[in-house]
Image (cartoon, rainbow, N blue to C red; front, side, top):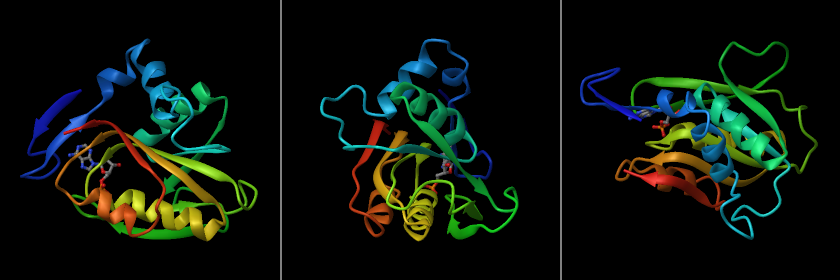
Length: 171
Ligand code: AMP
């Protein structure tokens, strides 16, 4: 991991996992950890699909899905998916954005594991939880590589779901 101060805005210490993504042993190992393969039984119960949040969640979500023998559903930033989509807006640690999903991609009642790189204020994950609920899916858990302590991410997620949140690292 690299840490870059004042990126993309003054006051933000940006954590970048590019070196982990490029590591042939690191990527599958972190995928296995994210999907709960380190714990028996899995902290997330039964999981039908992994949901990766654009964009670094796609890399990590795919690694987690492959480790768990599951498929990966991409939650996209606004304007990337054609046709009818569900949309949820949210506040980032910097700026605002919207996320979208096709509601028909998984059967109603599917249990999904949300995967992203960093949990900061929790706005991104909370919006994704709302999207999953509106699509008719059950959030089995939230798995992130890094939880940034003291930014309220846990509380923001807990306001939407009582699904377990598992960071591999708390900073
Ligand atoms: P938040 O919605 O505040 O929890 O922010 C989480 C999203 O923003 C994740 O998708 C991260 O990729 C990104 N993010 C927020 N803060 C940071 C940070 N300090 N370093 C790297 N990525 C971050």
